[in-house]
Length: 313
Image (tube, rainbow, N blue to C red; front, top):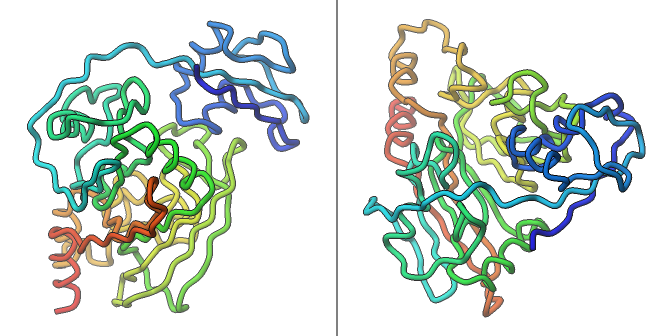
């Protein structure tokens, strides 16, 4: 049975529709949340509610998620870079362009489809997310841990929830950051009107903490190491946009941002990048069975390394 989750509306949530509020709190589409409400899986202060009801401070919302509609998962012989494997888990190096699990518009070609082909045993992890403990955006490359057993899945999921996992990313951002590094401690939630974006000003935002260190500076760019201390959707991308340094090549958060002289060699190279310059480089966690600390590192993906080499030349 799915676990019931309870949320409490803050003063900042006053007047927000219940479905909009829950979309900001949970990784679920608005239509999915509306289905839960219609099926009686959501209560407001202990009573059935409508998606359009408006919240007041102190309101308590209980949610028991429904399983997503059945979807036939197809095992596909897709290339998969395995960094580590044992009886409990697999660490893979996901390429940019691969969606992690099936969903609307992506029933095939995902990491899950590849996992089902390459491994006999994968944790349940939900109807369409077997093995998936955490995710990377489609355009982000790098390390991701997959659970083979339900025990491993539960243990790893708790580590992510308790913020015990090391997650370090490499990224290139627009603009020259003169400080040695910094911290962005701002909540992140679904944008009120642009539903493919996240925002630091969302009324349904949740706490999010990102720390960054400048590794190298270029005239128009900064190369950063970024450490995630929470795991909100698009957290790095939304946080860096907020401080005026969006990730290079990001199709959502800096679609109109180009280096000065858009027809310059660097401008043309960005145009050829086809995705955000963001790579999950280091992943560390305690092994779910032995408790031994695990640390994995992935070199910068080839397309990103090529751009960095050009800037350094």
